[in-house]
Image (cartoon, rainbow, N blue to C red; front, side, top):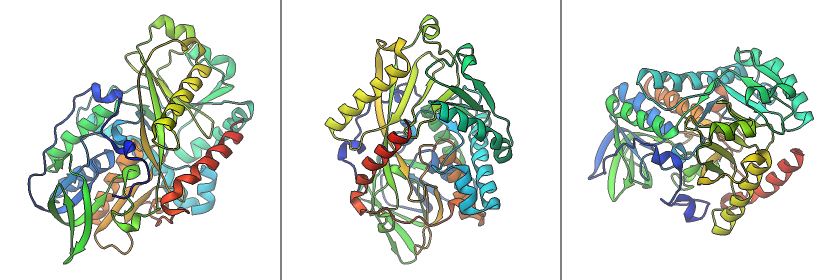
Length: 437
Protein backbone atom coordinates (compact mmCIF):
# COMPACT_ATOMS: atom_id res chain seq x y z
CA UNK A 1 0.00 0.00 0.00
CA UNK A 2 1.11 3.58 -0.68
CA UNK A 3 -0.20 5.72 2.16
CA UNK A 4 1.23 9.13 3.00
CA UNK A 5 1.26 9.06 6.82
CA UNK A 6 3.49 7.16 9.19
CA UNK A 7 2.41 3.56 9.92
CA UNK A 8 1.13 4.58 13.37
CA UNK A 9 -1.74 6.45 11.71
CA UNK A 10 -3.01 3.10 10.44
CA UNK A 11 -2.10 0.88 13.39
CA UNK A 12 -4.59 -0.98 15.53
CA UNK A 13 -3.63 0.93 18.67
CA UNK A 14 -6.21 3.53 19.67
CA UNK A 15 -7.80 4.95 22.81
CA UNK A 16 -11.11 5.80 21.17
CA UNK A 17 -13.92 5.86 23.70
CA UNK A 18 -16.64 4.62 21.38
CA UNK A 19 -15.18 1.13 21.15
CA UNK A 20 -15.93 0.65 24.85
CA UNK A 21 -19.60 1.57 24.51
CA UNK A 22 -20.51 -1.43 22.33
CA UNK A 23 -22.07 -3.51 21.12
CA UNK A 24 -19.47 -4.51 18.57
CA UNK A 25 -20.43 -6.88 15.78
CA UNK A 26 -18.11 -9.70 14.79
CA UNK A 27 -17.41 -9.92 11.09
CA UNK A 28 -16.49 -13.09 9.25
CA UNK A 29 -12.96 -13.98 8.22
CA UNK A 30 -12.33 -14.29 4.50
CA UNK A 31 -11.58 -17.98 4.38
CA UNK A 32 -11.22 -18.55 0.65
CA UNK A 33 -11.71 -17.17 -2.83
CA UNK A 34 -15.00 -15.46 -3.52
CA UNK A 35 -17.05 -14.41 -6.55
CA UNK A 36 -19.60 -11.59 -6.14
CA UNK A 37 -21.43 -9.00 -8.18
CA UNK A 38 -20.05 -6.05 -6.20
CA UNK A 39 -17.07 -5.83 -3.86
CA UNK A 40 -17.10 -2.89 -1.46
CA UNK A 41 -13.67 -1.86 -0.19
CA UNK A 42 -14.09 -0.22 3.21
CA UNK A 43 -16.61 -1.10 5.91
CA UNK A 44 -17.39 2.30 7.41
CA UNK A 45 -20.57 4.33 7.12
CA UNK A 46 -20.15 4.75 3.36
CA UNK A 47 -19.33 1.14 2.60
CA UNK A 48 -22.08 -0.31 4.78
CA UNK A 49 -24.73 2.00 3.33
CA UNK A 50 -23.63 1.05 -0.17
CA UNK A 51 -23.61 -2.65 0.70
CA UNK A 52 -27.07 -2.65 2.27
CA UNK A 53 -28.64 -0.85 -0.68
CA UNK A 54 -26.84 -3.07 -3.22
CA UNK A 55 -27.84 -6.27 -1.44
CA UNK A 56 -31.46 -5.17 -1.15
CA UNK A 57 -31.36 -4.54 -4.88
CA UNK A 58 -30.38 -8.14 -5.52
CA UNK A 59 -26.62 -7.76 -5.98
CA UNK A 60 -24.36 -10.37 -4.40
CA UNK A 61 -22.27 -8.04 -2.27
CA UNK A 62 -19.15 -8.44 -0.11
CA UNK A 63 -17.59 -5.79 2.11
CA UNK A 64 -13.84 -6.01 2.69
CA UNK A 65 -12.49 -3.96 5.59
CA UNK A 66 -8.80 -3.71 6.40
CA UNK A 67 -9.28 -3.89 10.16
CA UNK A 68 -11.95 -4.69 12.75
CA UNK A 69 -15.42 -3.12 12.51
CA UNK A 70 -15.51 0.68 13.07
CA UNK A 71 -11.76 0.83 13.53
CA UNK A 72 -11.31 3.75 11.10
CA UNK A 73 -12.97 7.12 10.78
CA UNK A 74 -16.45 5.72 11.41
CA UNK A 75 -15.39 4.74 14.92
CA UNK A 76 -13.19 7.76 15.65
CA UNK A 77 -15.34 10.78 14.76
CA UNK A 78 -17.17 13.14 17.09
CA UNK A 79 -20.63 11.83 16.25
CA UNK A 80 -21.93 14.98 14.53
CA UNK A 81 -24.68 14.06 12.05
CA UNK A 82 -25.15 17.41 10.36
CA UNK A 83 -25.08 19.48 7.20
CA UNK A 84 -21.74 19.55 5.44
CA UNK A 85 -19.37 17.63 3.23
CA UNK A 86 -17.54 20.55 1.67
CA UNK A 87 -15.15 23.31 2.70
CA UNK A 88 -16.71 25.75 0.22
CA UNK A 89 -19.13 28.45 1.29
CA UNK A 90 -22.64 28.36 -0.12
CA UNK A 91 -21.97 31.52 -2.10
CA UNK A 92 -18.93 29.97 -3.79
CA UNK A 93 -20.92 26.82 -4.56
CA UNK A 94 -23.62 28.90 -6.26
CA UNK A 95 -21.02 30.77 -8.26
CA UNK A 96 -19.05 27.68 -9.26
CA UNK A 97 -21.86 25.26 -10.09
CA UNK A 98 -24.82 27.51 -10.87
CA UNK A 99 -28.12 27.99 -9.06
CA UNK A 100 -29.72 24.66 -9.99
CA UNK A 101 -26.73 22.45 -9.09
CA UNK A 102 -26.20 24.43 -5.88
CA UNK A 103 -29.84 23.95 -4.85
CA UNK A 104 -29.47 20.23 -5.60
CA UNK A 105 -26.38 20.08 -3.35
CA UNK A 106 -28.10 21.92 -0.48
CA UNK A 107 -31.00 19.48 -0.77
CA UNK A 108 -28.54 16.57 -0.78
CA UNK A 109 -27.09 17.76 2.52
CA UNK A 110 -30.52 17.94 4.14
CA UNK A 111 -31.43 14.53 2.73
CA UNK A 112 -28.22 13.05 4.15
CA UNK A 113 -29.29 13.96 7.69
CA UNK A 114 -32.80 12.62 7.09
CA UNK A 115 -31.30 9.42 5.64
CA UNK A 116 -29.40 8.63 8.84
CA UNK A 117 -32.41 9.51 11.00
CA UNK A 118 -34.50 7.17 8.87
CA UNK A 119 -32.05 4.32 9.32
CA UNK A 120 -32.01 4.77 13.09
CA UNK A 121 -35.81 4.82 13.27
CA UNK A 122 -36.57 2.08 10.74
CA UNK A 123 -34.06 -0.38 12.17
CA UNK A 124 -34.44 0.46 15.86
CA UNK A 125 -30.82 1.53 16.25
CA UNK A 126 -30.33 3.11 19.67
CA UNK A 127 -27.39 5.44 19.08
CA UNK A 128 -27.74 7.80 22.08
CA UNK A 129 -29.01 10.65 19.90
CA UNK A 130 -29.40 14.18 21.20
CA UNK A 131 -29.21 17.83 20.05
CA UNK A 132 -31.81 19.78 18.09
CA UNK A 133 -29.69 20.70 15.09
CA UNK A 134 -26.22 22.19 15.44
CA UNK A 135 -25.06 25.40 17.07
CA UNK A 136 -22.27 27.57 15.70
CA UNK A 137 -20.58 29.94 18.14
CA UNK A 138 -19.03 33.22 16.99
CA UNK A 139 -15.44 33.50 18.19
CA UNK A 140 -15.15 37.21 17.33
CA UNK A 141 -17.34 40.24 16.76
CA UNK A 142 -16.57 40.04 13.06
CA UNK A 143 -17.68 36.40 13.00
CA UNK A 144 -20.92 37.30 14.80
CA UNK A 145 -21.69 39.97 12.22
CA UNK A 146 -21.04 37.51 9.39
CA UNK A 147 -23.19 34.90 11.12
CA UNK A 148 -26.16 37.25 11.23
CA UNK A 149 -25.81 37.86 7.50
CA UNK A 150 -25.51 34.15 6.81
CA UNK A 151 -28.69 33.45 8.77
CA UNK A 152 -30.66 35.36 6.15
CA UNK A 153 -29.73 32.73 3.54
CA UNK A 154 -30.30 29.56 5.59
CA UNK A 155 -34.03 29.42 4.90
CA UNK A 156 -33.49 29.99 1.18
CA UNK A 157 -30.83 27.29 0.94
CA UNK A 158 -32.19 24.65 3.33
CA UNK A 159 -35.82 25.54 4.02
CA UNK A 160 -35.39 25.95 7.79
CA UNK A 161 -35.23 29.03 9.97
CA UNK A 162 -32.08 29.37 12.10
CA UNK A 163 -32.20 30.76 15.61
CA UNK A 164 -29.81 33.60 16.45
CA UNK A 165 -28.72 33.88 20.08
CA UNK A 166 -27.34 37.16 21.36
CA UNK A 167 -24.21 37.13 23.50
CA UNK A 168 -26.13 38.04 26.66
CA UNK A 169 -28.50 35.09 26.23
CA UNK A 170 -25.91 32.34 25.78
CA UNK A 171 -25.37 31.55 29.46
CA UNK A 172 -29.10 31.23 30.05
CA UNK A 173 -29.18 28.47 27.45
CA UNK A 174 -26.17 26.64 28.89
CA UNK A 175 -23.84 27.84 26.14
CA UNK A 176 -21.56 30.07 28.16
CA UNK A 177 -18.05 30.85 27.00
CA UNK A 178 -15.95 33.46 25.21
CA UNK A 179 -18.49 33.77 22.41
CA UNK A 180 -20.05 36.84 20.79
CA UNK A 181 -23.28 35.14 19.78
CA UNK A 182 -24.50 31.91 18.23
CA UNK A 183 -26.69 30.47 15.50
CA UNK A 184 -28.59 27.20 15.74
CA UNK A 185 -29.60 25.55 12.48
CA UNK A 186 -32.37 23.02 13.22
CA UNK A 187 -31.01 20.26 10.99
CA UNK A 188 -28.93 17.44 12.43
CA UNK A 189 -28.27 15.65 15.68
CA UNK A 190 -25.47 13.97 17.60
CA UNK A 191 -25.03 10.23 18.00
CA UNK A 192 -22.73 7.49 19.22
CA UNK A 193 -20.93 6.47 16.01
CA UNK A 194 -20.03 2.99 17.30
CA UNK A 195 -23.66 2.14 18.00
CA UNK A 196 -24.76 3.57 14.67
CA UNK A 197 -22.08 1.57 12.87
CA UNK A 198 -23.03 -1.64 14.63
CA UNK A 199 -26.69 -1.10 13.75
CA UNK A 200 -25.71 -0.46 10.13
CA UNK A 201 -23.72 -3.69 10.03
CA UNK A 202 -26.69 -5.69 11.30
CA UNK A 203 -28.92 -4.01 8.71
CA UNK A 204 -26.45 -4.80 5.91
CA UNK A 205 -26.28 -8.46 6.94
CA UNK A 206 -30.08 -8.71 7.09
CA UNK A 207 -30.16 -7.19 3.62
CA UNK A 208 -27.97 -10.01 2.34
CA UNK A 209 -24.48 -8.47 2.30
CA UNK A 210 -21.44 -10.43 3.48
CA UNK A 211 -19.06 -8.52 5.78
CA UNK A 212 -15.40 -9.47 6.15
CA UNK A 213 -13.07 -7.87 8.69
CA UNK A 214 -9.28 -7.86 8.89
CA UNK A 215 -9.23 -8.31 5.12
CA UNK A 216 -7.03 -5.52 3.71
CA UNK A 217 -7.15 -5.27 -0.06
CA UNK A 218 -3.56 -5.24 -1.28
CA UNK A 219 -4.10 -5.52 -5.01
CA UNK A 220 -6.83 -4.44 -7.42
CA UNK A 221 -6.77 -5.13 -11.13
CA UNK A 222 -9.03 -5.61 -14.12
CA UNK A 223 -8.86 -9.04 -15.79
CA UNK A 224 -11.08 -10.56 -18.46
CA UNK A 225 -13.83 -8.00 -18.00
CA UNK A 226 -13.99 -8.37 -14.22
CA UNK A 227 -12.14 -7.03 -11.19
CA UNK A 228 -9.83 -9.16 -9.09
CA UNK A 229 -9.08 -8.06 -5.53
CA UNK A 230 -6.42 -9.69 -3.38
CA UNK A 231 -7.15 -9.83 0.36
CA UNK A 232 -5.65 -12.17 2.96
CA UNK A 233 -3.97 -14.10 0.12
CA UNK A 234 -7.40 -14.85 -1.31
CA UNK A 235 -8.94 -13.66 -4.55
CA UNK A 236 -12.28 -11.85 -4.68
CA UNK A 237 -13.68 -11.56 -8.18
CA UNK A 238 -16.35 -8.93 -8.82
CA UNK A 239 -18.14 -7.37 -11.74
CA UNK A 240 -18.05 -3.99 -10.01
CA UNK A 241 -16.07 -2.44 -7.15
CA UNK A 242 -16.91 0.41 -4.77
CA UNK A 243 -14.04 2.29 -3.12
CA UNK A 244 -15.23 3.55 0.27
CA UNK A 245 -11.94 4.09 2.08
CA UNK A 246 -11.93 7.91 2.29
CA UNK A 247 -8.91 9.19 4.29
CA UNK A 248 -7.63 5.63 4.73
CA UNK A 249 -7.20 5.10 1.00
CA UNK A 250 -4.00 4.01 -0.71
CA UNK A 251 -2.47 5.84 -3.68
CA UNK A 252 -2.08 2.61 -5.64
CA UNK A 253 -5.53 1.07 -5.14
CA UNK A 254 -5.89 1.95 -7.94
CA UNK A 255 -3.11 4.21 -9.28
CA UNK A 256 -5.83 6.62 -10.43
CA UNK A 257 -6.27 7.66 -6.79
CA UNK A 258 -2.72 9.00 -6.55
CA UNK A 259 -2.79 12.51 -5.03
CA UNK A 260 -6.52 12.97 -5.69
CA UNK A 261 -7.25 13.05 -1.94
CA UNK A 262 -5.48 14.43 1.11
CA UNK A 263 -5.86 12.72 4.50
CA UNK A 264 -5.84 15.16 7.43
CA UNK A 265 -5.67 14.26 11.09
CA UNK A 266 -8.36 15.32 13.55
CA UNK A 267 -7.94 14.92 17.33
CA UNK A 268 -10.44 14.39 20.14
CA UNK A 269 -10.24 14.35 23.93
CA UNK A 270 -12.95 13.22 26.33
CA UNK A 271 -13.41 14.13 29.98
CA UNK A 272 -14.65 12.05 32.84
CA UNK A 273 -18.33 12.39 33.71
CA UNK A 274 -19.07 15.96 34.80
CA UNK A 275 -21.55 16.48 37.60
CA UNK A 276 -24.48 18.87 37.21
CA UNK A 277 -22.68 21.21 39.62
CA UNK A 278 -19.56 21.20 37.45
CA UNK A 279 -21.61 21.86 34.34
CA UNK A 280 -23.34 24.76 36.04
CA UNK A 281 -20.00 26.17 37.20
CA UNK A 282 -18.76 26.29 33.59
CA UNK A 283 -22.09 27.55 32.30
CA UNK A 284 -22.29 24.68 29.83
CA UNK A 285 -25.09 22.19 30.33
CA UNK A 286 -26.64 22.31 26.88
CA UNK A 287 -27.19 19.08 24.95
CA UNK A 288 -26.46 20.89 21.69
CA UNK A 289 -23.61 19.74 19.49
CA UNK A 290 -21.58 22.86 18.82
CA UNK A 291 -18.58 24.23 16.96
CA UNK A 292 -16.96 27.62 16.75
CA UNK A 293 -16.58 29.89 13.73
CA UNK A 294 -12.83 29.54 13.31
CA UNK A 295 -11.34 28.17 10.11
CA UNK A 296 -9.35 25.87 12.40
CA UNK A 297 -12.52 25.14 14.30
CA UNK A 298 -13.14 23.42 17.61
CA UNK A 299 -16.13 21.09 17.90
CA UNK A 300 -17.61 19.86 21.16
CA UNK A 301 -20.64 18.44 22.91
CA UNK A 302 -21.81 17.15 26.24
CA UNK A 303 -22.56 13.46 25.93
CA UNK A 304 -25.78 12.08 27.45
CA UNK A 305 -23.79 10.46 30.28
CA UNK A 306 -22.14 13.78 31.26
CA UNK A 307 -18.75 13.37 29.58
CA UNK A 308 -17.55 16.30 27.48
CA UNK A 309 -16.11 15.68 24.02
CA UNK A 310 -13.74 18.28 22.53
CA UNK A 311 -12.14 18.05 19.10
CA UNK A 312 -9.95 20.05 16.74
CA UNK A 313 -7.51 19.62 13.88
CA UNK A 314 -4.76 17.07 14.42
CA UNK A 315 -1.01 17.08 13.96
CA UNK A 316 0.89 17.38 10.72
CA UNK A 317 2.28 13.90 11.16
CA UNK A 318 1.55 10.77 13.16
CA UNK A 319 4.98 10.68 14.79
CA UNK A 320 5.20 10.48 18.58
CA UNK A 321 6.69 13.97 18.77
CA UNK A 322 3.95 15.49 16.62
CA UNK A 323 1.23 13.69 18.55
CA UNK A 324 2.69 14.94 21.83
CA UNK A 325 2.58 18.52 20.56
CA UNK A 326 -1.02 18.26 19.40
CA UNK A 327 -1.94 16.59 22.70
CA UNK A 328 -0.63 19.63 24.55
CA UNK A 329 -2.36 22.04 22.19
CA UNK A 330 -5.78 20.43 22.35
CA UNK A 331 -5.66 20.53 26.15
CA UNK A 332 -4.52 24.16 26.11
CA UNK A 333 -7.36 25.14 23.78
CA UNK A 334 -9.88 23.20 25.86
CA UNK A 335 -8.72 24.92 29.05
CA UNK A 336 -8.78 28.32 27.38
CA UNK A 337 -12.37 27.92 26.24
CA UNK A 338 -13.58 26.12 29.39
CA UNK A 339 -11.22 27.34 32.16
CA UNK A 340 -13.40 26.05 35.00
CA UNK A 341 -12.69 22.51 33.81
CA UNK A 342 -8.90 22.96 33.69
CA UNK A 343 -8.26 20.27 36.29
CA UNK A 344 -10.91 17.84 35.07
CA UNK A 345 -9.43 14.46 34.14
CA UNK A 346 -9.14 13.59 30.46
CA UNK A 347 -9.95 9.89 30.25
CA UNK A 348 -9.58 9.28 26.51
CA UNK A 349 -7.71 10.79 23.60
CA UNK A 350 -7.57 9.66 20.00
CA UNK A 351 -7.13 10.86 16.44
CA UNK A 352 -8.34 9.83 13.01
CA UNK A 353 -8.08 10.77 9.36
CA UNK A 354 -10.60 12.91 7.52
CA UNK A 355 -10.36 13.40 3.78
CA UNK A 356 -9.95 16.60 1.75
CA UNK A 357 -10.33 16.82 -2.01
CA UNK A 358 -8.59 19.27 -4.38
CA UNK A 359 -11.81 21.13 -5.21
CA UNK A 360 -13.05 20.86 -1.60
CA UNK A 361 -16.13 18.89 -2.67
CA UNK A 362 -16.82 15.15 -2.27
CA UNK A 363 -16.46 12.80 -5.19
CA UNK A 364 -19.24 10.26 -5.72
CA UNK A 365 -19.44 8.37 -8.98
CA UNK A 366 -17.73 6.18 -11.59
CA UNK A 367 -13.93 6.32 -11.73
CA UNK A 368 -13.05 7.60 -15.20
CA UNK A 369 -11.29 5.13 -17.47
CA UNK A 370 -11.99 2.20 -15.13
CA UNK A 371 -15.08 0.29 -16.18
CA UNK A 372 -17.06 -1.02 -13.22
CA UNK A 373 -15.08 0.94 -10.63
CA UNK A 374 -16.80 3.53 -8.41
CA UNK A 375 -15.79 5.73 -5.50
CA UNK A 376 -17.44 7.76 -2.75
CA UNK A 377 -15.03 9.85 -0.71
CA UNK A 378 -13.90 13.27 0.48
CA UNK A 379 -16.46 14.39 3.06
CA UNK A 380 -14.22 17.01 4.70
CA UNK A 381 -14.93 15.95 8.28
CA UNK A 382 -18.70 15.51 7.86
CA UNK A 383 -18.90 11.86 6.94
CA UNK A 384 -21.55 10.68 9.38
CA UNK A 385 -24.39 12.07 7.29
CA UNK A 386 -22.81 12.76 3.90
CA UNK A 387 -20.68 9.61 3.85
CA UNK A 388 -23.71 7.49 4.72
CA UNK A 389 -25.94 9.06 2.09
CA UNK A 390 -23.22 9.01 -0.55
CA UNK A 391 -22.83 5.25 -0.15
CA UNK A 392 -26.57 4.83 -0.58
CA UNK A 393 -26.70 7.16 -3.62
CA UNK A 394 -23.77 5.42 -5.30
CA UNK A 395 -25.43 2.03 -4.82
CA UNK A 396 -28.62 3.36 -6.39
CA UNK A 397 -26.58 4.63 -9.32
CA UNK A 398 -24.95 1.22 -9.79
CA UNK A 399 -28.28 -0.61 -9.60
CA UNK A 400 -30.52 1.66 -11.64
CA UNK A 401 -28.45 4.44 -13.16
CA UNK A 402 -29.91 6.90 -10.64
CA UNK A 403 -28.51 10.36 -11.39
CA UNK A 404 -25.91 11.59 -8.94
CA UNK A 405 -25.79 15.22 -7.74
CA UNK A 406 -23.91 17.35 -10.24
CA UNK A 407 -21.64 18.98 -7.67
CA UNK A 408 -20.20 15.67 -6.42
CA UNK A 409 -19.86 13.84 -9.73
CA UNK A 410 -17.04 16.03 -11.06
CA UNK A 411 -13.80 14.10 -11.47
CA UNK A 412 -11.30 15.28 -8.83
CA UNK A 413 -8.02 16.76 -9.97
CA UNK A 414 -4.69 16.03 -8.25
CA UNK A 415 -3.04 17.88 -5.39
CA UNK A 416 0.41 19.32 -6.10
CA UNK A 417 3.51 17.57 -4.71
CA UNK A 418 2.21 14.02 -5.12
CA UNK A 419 3.15 11.81 -2.19
CA UNK A 420 4.61 14.87 -0.43
CA UNK A 421 1.29 16.74 -0.50
CA UNK A 422 1.10 16.77 3.28
CA UNK A 423 3.57 19.66 3.03
CA UNK A 424 0.65 21.79 1.84
CA UNK A 425 -0.95 21.60 5.28
CA UNK A 426 1.58 23.66 7.26
CA UNK A 427 1.15 26.89 5.24
CA UNK A 428 -2.61 26.29 5.02
CA UNK A 429 -2.87 25.99 8.80
CA UNK A 430 -0.72 29.09 9.26
CA UNK A 431 -2.95 31.11 6.96
CA UNK A 432 -6.10 29.81 8.62
CA UNK A 433 -4.70 30.73 12.02
CA UNK A 434 -4.07 34.29 10.85
CA UNK A 435 -7.61 34.57 9.50
CA UNK A 436 -8.98 33.32 12.82
CA UNK A 437 -7.55 36.25 14.76
